[in-house]
Image (cartoon, rainbow, N blue to C red; front, side, top):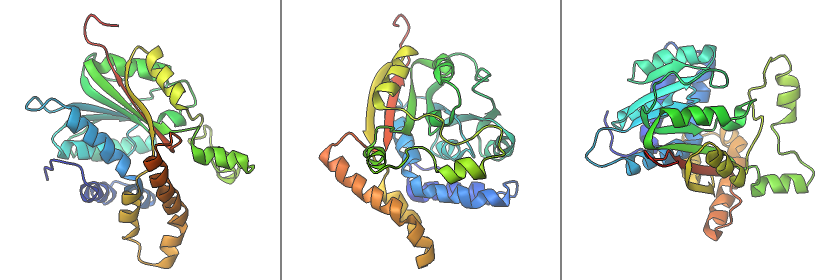
Length: 283
């Protein structure tokens, strides 16, 4: 399959392809397929790359940092890109083998302690999405490494939750917490050495500062809402009331998000930022 533009149907095929691989543990398959509910984010990134890549030139070279099971890069290959990926841990070793069979150069790397396993000036785009908030360390050295492996003029795409979102402000106003679920953090993860949830979320000003302090040129830095259409697309696959009702909260939030977006209120749930590596002779 070689598509020209990312679609939800195309992403769903990629997720099914990965989830149905016999090497994927059974308890991962539902989680992988459920990523369709927020699939608009991956397709947004891929559309940006395809739109910004020079027309008629060589296929864009992409690195996905924090790739998990590799769906973004597997789909990128099917869209005609050259793609590499990094992640870390036992699960990554499984995902590495599966993604490699679909043309992805997937390497294991602890980005908090190791350099990216690629030479300088290797990639046109690096995607660093839904990752920064999970680090128990500063992302500064990771951004420096990303800058190193980008070609001059290459771009890093960052997506991370907006700590100053309207939803977080309302939670605090009514006495709630903006952190991960307390029961999950305190009890479910009590025996884990390192908590793998959100350690630190960022505001738009902080994300801009992170790019500037690692010598990127900030091309974009804005907030956006999670798309409603992918969630509806996902829910159509769940026919029973019992399966749909647990999703009603996210459905409502996505619908409200459509209103905030129309009103141009900069308090959405996600931050999108693009940093450019300066071309030769510029700092």
